[in-house]
Each structure stands twice: as C-alpha cells, then as structure tokens.
Length: 114
Image 1 (cartoon, rainbow, N blue to C red):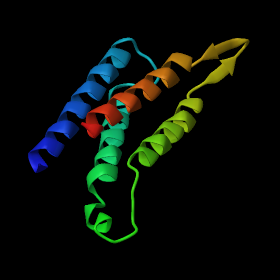
Image 2 (image 1 turned 120 degrees about the vertical axis):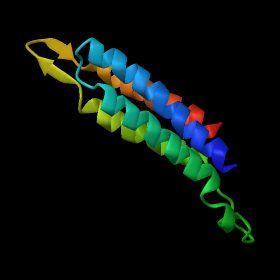
Image 3 (image 1 turned 180 degrees about the vertical axis):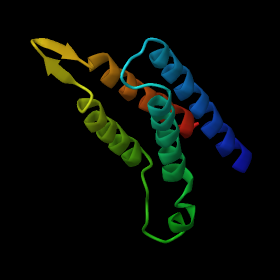
Image 4 (image 1 turned 90 degrees about the horizontal axis):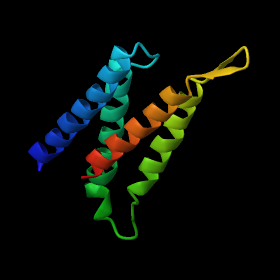
C-alpha cells in the first residue's frame, strides 16, 4: 500500500510539472514550481484524508468523509487563483492562470484519490 501512495504522489508531481513547464515555456505568471506544488499538495491532502485517520475509524460512532478535504482544497485554490487575477486599464490578466491552478488542483485530487 505504501508504494501505491508514493506512486500517486510521483504521478501527481509529474502531471503538475508538465503543466508548469508549459506555463514556463509561455512565460506566464505561475510556472513549474507553482503547478508542481499545487498538484502534489492536493494529491497529498486527498491521500491523508483517505488513509490518515484509519485508526480513528475503529472508534464507535465515528465516521469520516474524505470528500470534505477535497472541497476545502477547491476553496483554498479559489483564493489562490483570485490572487493571480489583476485588472489593468480595462484588461483582465491572470484569469487563465487562475483556471490552470484550479484544474491542476483537480488533477491532483483525482490522482490522490486513486
């Protein structure tokens, strides 16, 4: 099971890095490190929400919902993306960057969820 979780983190890192490399190549605001960290972090959060509390589940009357963590990741990335959006002289900049970060987080959640 440990190798499966490590493989998920490696795959998420690779996907995030690929998206980030494309953004770096196009000289956009958020690049390799940002997309790599967003994808890796969201995959890690999903893995922890699924497997990190297994000892607590044995307690009577305790139920956990891993999807709650995923919802919080989506909210957090929304705030991060909102910080990349700038309005300059009637032009909106950073909207594609925000959408890219949001999609990268979704990819990380999917990979982390298995």
